[in-house]
Length: 195
Image (cartoon, rainbow, N blue to C red):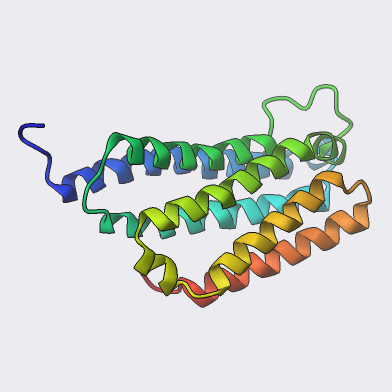
């Protein structure tokens, strides 16, 4: 293609679209929390749901931070651009699953979350699968620089999330959530305190 765009400009363009999608994701979570604060009795709060809101918020913020390493891509092709947009969009879908447009037909967040957990956990599993691909896209040197804890974190989280699809027991759901939050938080603090 004639007059190829310099790489730094392409990265800025990609960052803008990622920022828009992830901004919508964070907005969805914060708006949902604000509605709960505004009308706590009307929403029938569910601690496990709120815990997954926190986990998803951490995941979105971490993704936004982690995507800084896309500047290492030497050549941007449309396929990579489309992949990154789709990957960011998965985060939005996870946020939308936590806070639907309407709670009509549900007794509260416990009823809603338990009835839609397969979708939520399936989207979250997809996020961690795509995370592997995204990390490889940034180069094997980058992938290896994350150490053994990176694939360990992703694989264990995917296992926990897959287990969540089948768990109906509230205590088991809470234990799964706590394990996922500890794992995600520890990984973020160990790996990404600075860019």
